[in-house]
Amino acid sequence: MKKVFKFILNTIPRPILIRFSYLIRPVLALILRGKKYTDPIDGKSFSKFLPYGYENPRENVLSPSTLSLERHRLLWLYLKNETDFFSAPAKVLHFAPEQAFYKKFKGLHHLDYTTTDLHSPLADVKADICELPFSDNTYDIIFCNHVLEHIPDDTKAMKELYRVLKSGGMAILQIPQDLSRETTFEDDSITDPVERAKIFGQYDHVRVYGRDYFDKLRSIGFKVDEIDYTKTMDKKEISGYCLAPGEILPVCYKH
Image 1 (cartoon, rainbow, N blue to C red):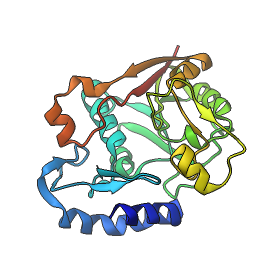
Image 2: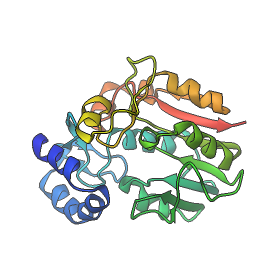
Image 3: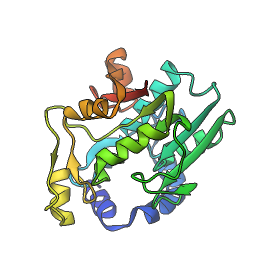
C-alpha cells in the first residue's frame, strides 16, 4: 500500500487529489472503522490509519475520515486545549487550507475566516504569499502550515506574514521538521522533481529547514514560542492519536 500511495502522491496534481479525496473518504472510513486509533478532529476511531509520504511513506499516519496527518491533529489539540480559537471572535487568514480543517473552521460563525493560495480549489483569494493583497495589521490569527518550504524567497513571504498580522496577533507556521539538523539546507540548482524528492522530501519542496528556522522567524520580528505539545501528553494519548513525539509547534506573535 505504501508504494501505491507514493505513486499517487507523486503523479496526480494536488488540486485533482483534493477533489478525488472527497469521494474516497467515506469509503475508507467505513472499511477501516475500529477502536484502536482516534482522530480528535472528528472523534472517529479506526483499526488503523493509512500510510502517507511522497518519498518515504510513513505507516499509520493519515486519518481515513478527515485525511489529517500528525501535524494537523497536533495543531487541533493545541488550539482546542490551549487557546480560545473555538470561542473568541477573530479575523483569520488560512494559507493553503487543509481539508482536515476547512469545513470545521468555515463553520465557526464567530470567525471572519479567509482562505488563500495560488492553486488550491479551497482558496477564497488567489494570491502570492510574497505579494499579499491585504492591508497591514489585518488579521488576528494566521495559519500557514507546510507552505514556506515550497517558496523560493521565504524571507519575503515571512515579511508579508508579519506585515498583515495584527499587533498582538498569533501566527502558527508549521514546517516539515528535521530537528537533528541545525541549519537549513537549500540549493537552487536542484530543479529535477525526482532529485528534489530525494533531497528535500517532496518533489515541490525547495529546502529542508533546520532548527535555525525559529531564529529566522525571530529575525523578521516575530516572538516565537517553540512548543513541544506532545510533552504534555502520555504515551497512550500520543499513540492513540497517531502523533509525532517531539514535533515542535512554531507559535509566533507580532509585538
